[in-house]
Image 1 (cartoon, rainbow, N blue to C red):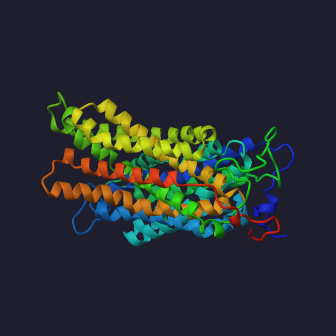
Image 2 (spheres, rainbow, N blue to C red; image 1 turned 90 degrees about the vertical axis):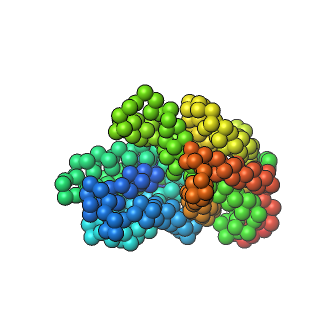
Image 3 (tube, one colour; image 1 turned 30 degrees about the vertical axis):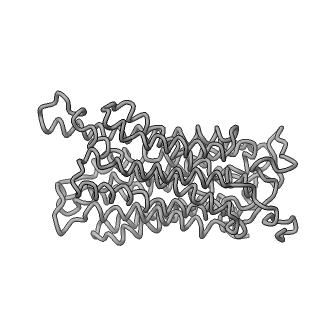
Length: 468
């Protein structure tokens, strides 16, 4: 027996007396750690001043636009690694996968720290973006796949419990990074390098809770009192579809578009939310403040507070909407996402002109709750359509939509805003056209979701392992 055989799937099968409620905290620990990716922007300014320390030196320090590729690479690799290694995740089990994810995510920080120390952006991108991105992908899908198998009675709630951790990772990662950089900063250093090293070690240890606690259910295990449907009901199948067959179905590609369009609209706004509030309401945020420095501080604080509030809506939405889908059905909840989302995006320009900050903020909160809810609901949607046999692998392939949206969303918002400003549009109005574009994308998403139908039985796997 190998010294590492305890990591194998067959050695992680739960024994008598194991409670499935130990699995959500293990999954949450992994997702809270890798959710730090949403807070990576906190490093942008210090990284852009690595040489100048107190200010960025032209021609020597990195530009903020160049540093954006670190996060973009991580999101792209997240989706690609989830797609490539999805079947391996199902074969190997959650314990081995979560350990590999912890190693990659921790090592990504370490390599990024070395890259920062030698002032090599390519090394940082390779470390955090590629190696860390692999950790993101493996760490994202493994807990979700495991939870779906443990909670066949409430798959939406189960995936929501884990994926809300990814949305909440920034609430831990941002202050952790900020405080560490402040502690390590010197007149000759921004504190980024030791912070990368420290966070790599901290997150590696924290993520170990996952592989130490997680178990998979025994074959044919069912929760007490749960009666599986004897025939397919609506979009909930009794068949099983493997990953290679799932991508041949129109349902997979419709859901790919559903996720892509929902994330494109949400992630583009999420990345510019703070700046958007500051530019649209700059006058109202500084009413009564005459000192220029104090006014700037007030605007900056308002933007930071807005971003933090949106993170809370993002987190809450992941649990609320996915849990609601257990009662309303996955397709119906996505209908709400797209219909309500299109309406709220279209209202944003009017709300901005009205000067009502509270209503503006609450509307964005609803938008971000549905953005987060879309991530949490999609694994249960896949389980309903394709069964559980390789739902992790199917989910991994679907996450390539997130990779594409991670580029499309920010690009749409940034370039449309830049084009508007260059053509004389005031900064406060430069987002109006973008909001209408996002609303249009969500209308297309509504149509795609409406077209989703049950998977044909010819795609089901027979018990002997052959396709029907």
